[in-house]
Length: 338
Image (cartoon, rainbow, N blue to C red; front, top):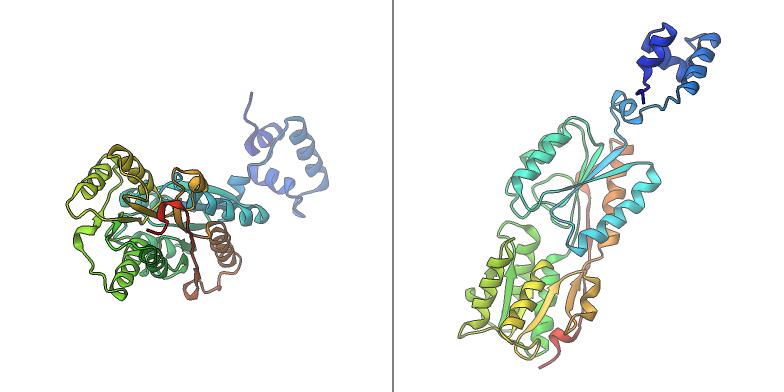
């Protein structure tokens, strides 16, 4: 089937594409007779305007991008739902980009945005992100950016996040109050802001309760499940085995449960487990998982609302906004009192 565009109509009517375009937009520059001819042929040929091409001419794409590390994490799934709740009412489209925790991929995505593909960006940085030059470079192209959950303090823009320091403190204090003293912390990145702040909260809670912070109990994991299983197994087979573990990110929970099953360790009898997680199935795991849960949906809505304020009002000062949400401790069987 022939691809009908402005040039198709122009050629058949022996008009310029500019004249056809103006006729379709009911411009006063075009006579009624010419308008009728153009509209009639457009109807006969079933011509459908290309909204993307039109938006490029106006330098507006009616599209925003969500750049996140992964979609497997239940936090991001809920946050996207919150974002969509705002976007749909604005008549915009959403493009989701996954960095898979790669800094290089994140930089390449932002380079692609410089073409005007999107009108704004909602970003949660990768675990490898150590520089923000690619972000500030996109901002120089007048494309607004809002960071959420995983933030970089160096980025001059709105930040929507949880109080990760207090969340780390709360998770640790919960374990201490339930009788656990040898508490390990599983990190996912040395550079990731949320991981560092949660670890500081963990360390402070131990210090405040006269429990020494042991380097051997602070374990850095990676994105490789095989490696994570090995380091967790080594930790749980050591002579100074911890009696509790804090998983700083949701993905490490599966590793912990699988290793415990392999070593025939009972949760929480042999090892208590608490995870930063929005996992809806946490309540039906065996045993049910104690979680520190973030208000992901509300965070997504807030981040999207801030982005649209900047898109609709260029003078809106994004760099002055920091929206901090509290996380919630949900105690379950994996951390019952000793």
